[in-house]
Image (cartoon, rainbow, N blue to C red):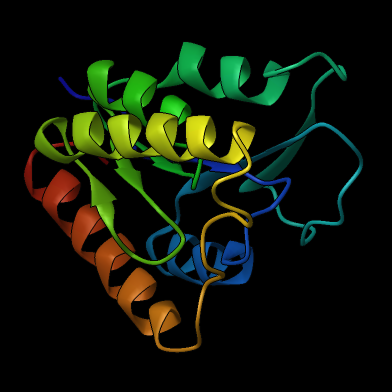
Length: 155
């Protein structure tokens, strides 16, 4: 019997936390807000703040250890997304783009290439910020993922 749907937010730089709270509230889902430092979260028994130690990738490791079928992970971190997809979790980026087994490998390769180019001084800047038009796309992707998992027996 599948377990409950739980949402894990890689929260340090997540621009769609409020959207996650709204969808989770509608479905009565537990949300884990994972960060390296204190962060305000709504007071709710269904939203839990987790502050991890300041170690490199500590928040990622905490989330990846809990990623499993029935979990939804919200992150823009491609290595974390890759780990969570491999563990069977559903992973959605803040722009609403889901990470899948078929897409995460290419995203990881592109990220590594861009990192190498930045190190050589060829490219500056990082990923583009989440635009206003991305928020409805994110809400739709999260809602569809919850419905799909519910139909698969998770609750």
